[in-house]
Image (cartoon, rainbow, N blue to C red; front, side, top):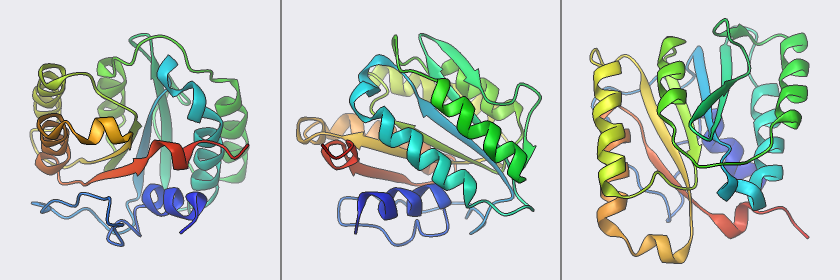
Length: 206
């Protein structure tokens, strides 16, 4: 499966069940709709994403362009502890004009700073989506992940928002089983999935 097809399948949500051997799929306590109507893409734009960010831009455009007119969306990047939302007013209708503006917005975002996602998490939940698709290459150590888990639990008490995490990993990262278990806990406890993608496969072709 090509990089584009694999990432699109994850982001579209409708193909999440078609997990690759690398994927970690956990029991879903409250199954998310196969095609959620209200979606927030939450994307890491920290400095560590520099070598994969051009691929992220293209896959984000591809995914949003595939949304149906009946679906609402927003995109929130985060870097240096700040949330960088496409729409500050909340979810937008998936019409051609908004998709075009989104493409321009994505091209203007550049990765920098650290990857503290807290403000982006708060902004994402404030949009009142059905699903949050969260792409990152790391959430810090186990202590930091557990703190984020607790914060999300407060924001998602009614379990109406499903959180799927798309994690770009290296072989070295795969060795930290405790960290993966902590990250998996966030998606599991919020009705979503943890999907791992090999970082090298996500890098743009040279």
